[in-house]
Image (cartoon, rainbow, N blue to C red):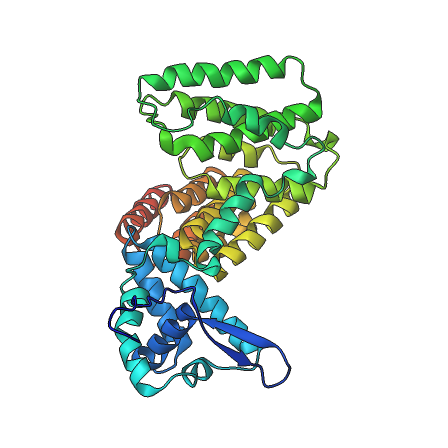
Length: 386
């Protein structure tokens, strides 16, 4: 190459090599992202995938600013590992395609990109874009809509157009926005069929969440409207819906898990309390399925939301036989779900159970000392009754 030739810059998605799978004629295309991950895996983590993934996961948890980038790398590493395994290959097979000097020159870039998260979003691979967080969020917002008799998408576009295309709503401007949104709903409620009401409310519940980052709702008017729509949605007669109830609850539970603004917090206990006995197993199964999936992808915050809802279900339906196992699973990471179960047991004069809830949860956690104090207070209170 002459001194005047432009320098070739390799970015993550550029092709690095191709590897023929030993058991078939399938050719695995390797990018520089794959190469950089293989270099870090070999040189920093002694080819231990789990050790590397755990390291990246801990860094993702420790930095909210870089969380999305770490999750992007984590997902690419996870899917690369899976693709190599299915092809009967190892990460070492990637490194065989390069000489030692080339790999030494690539290591600083690998450390910068993989461990330092120093890359532009435009460099991201499709595996880094379509992370579990993105896929599950999108599914929670709109992924089940095709199962509704009237697709909520018929209202979603009109609702979206009520918002500015860009910019921000100040707290004072939130009142006018609330009037536009409530006026839209009121007008369509008046002439909507039963199935159309489900679609209208369900579209509202998603669109407002998707747009909420552009709203300063310090006065709470948008949140109050959201809560009212959620309550109305839950009160509709879902037995008349022409869709599987398991699908209905999968959609609703997913929304509740990923709704992260507290708009439904005060309404969820009433939702669980109003469940018909035939609906309880469906809700429980949906919570378990979604929590298992969230734990698999290490989305702990959302998995904790699902676990909290288990506590709400068991408390509101007075499923006392479930309290101990739930408390043991909950630990002392949060306090209110534990105290709520214990208080419900005490209210029904199940004093041994009220104590056992605390005994099952106690252990290292953010609220261990507080829950120990509540436990001692309960023991003293119950002891005075004897």
